[in-house]
Image 1 (tube, rainbow, N blue to C red):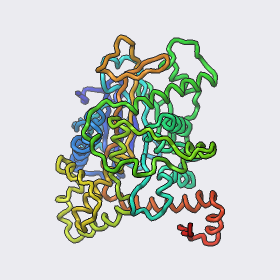
Image 2 (cartoon, one colour; image 1 turned 90 degrees about the horizontal axis):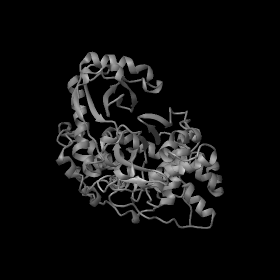
Image 3 (cartoon, rainbow, N blue to C red; image 1 turned 90 degrees about the vertical axis):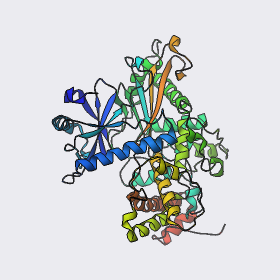
Image 4 (tube, one colour; image 1 turned 60 degrees about the horizontal axis):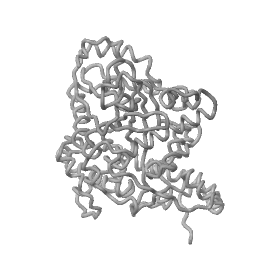
Length: 491
């Protein structure tokens, strides 16, 4: 791709995260990813190149082993003319959200990552001229901690996502808690999955976005303003799901179209479009842990109806949700069990700082790095090697807990369908599709202390302000001692 011959006006602001900014081409199915840094803290071109190479290598040699060849797109590093980069930066700056402008796009090195635009179909490019629908889902952590290191019993009953929702609302991040529970989506039970996806559509937050031909049509615009008009969404989706019938408007039309959308998302999430050895790498059987969350709105509805057991169908081993869950379950010790091991590694590095590169904490992320992750033992032998392995597995797990799944759909004619093309059917339409995973940058080693403190805040807030209100006995105990964070009583 000869980027230098393209006008900067052919590129548009696509989005950004904490460390990078992405622009997409108006015509071609590619995006450019540039690193960001705080003002006056620009890295050297060599440091930028090294950072980008680590990202590429990590996707290529590590995450692709967990998720599979077709699901992971690690991209490649390219060097751009500096004038092109500066002009591009000036063009997109007005489009950036104010909350993201605390960091500057790298305009000095000329290095960027070139990646496929995952809002577009990644297979069978000949249908690119047809409309493309893309659903981006950030599923979050799909299991309840099973570690014996967990000190608060509530963590064995309520998932982190559901607890964290209450703290986010209290801090003004969101206006109301979402009814979405990741355990429902990861259950493999279609009824629970439908409920989870409907909850995401009702309260998208930053966990669901929908694109049409690469343009965002539904999802969270910023931290406070979420697009929630289902009727508007239905107008966008109708040509995809009901291209020729008389279903035009009204609440029945909207409900029907949303139901079709949820069905399609569910079927693609349960599909298997890639063979990968990761499907054979099982950490801990899901059956050993709790398969439902007590705070789930779906679970509460069952209890209200006199049912106390959730059916869990389980995920097909080849589907992306299954592989995502297996990578997440590398967090075998929970942050409470992991943090002392992190401290052990830190103490070792204080004594032998030159060993940091030998331990591969900052890369290189190669085949040797991946092979060390396969040691699933939990018996602590007191060594730094054991502690480091668990720390690195935790970083992989945290990456998988924060990844996004992209489902791209394009209308498919009946005579085009074959065994070689993944196809999903609805009542009136059929789609060829591709499923991809992104946001796979390895979580920083230095973020572990923050995760440890945040975990305590989430649990303590939930115990004090949510569970206590549901339990009159606990509520009175908290009133007697406002500083109390854990109440133990005889059963």
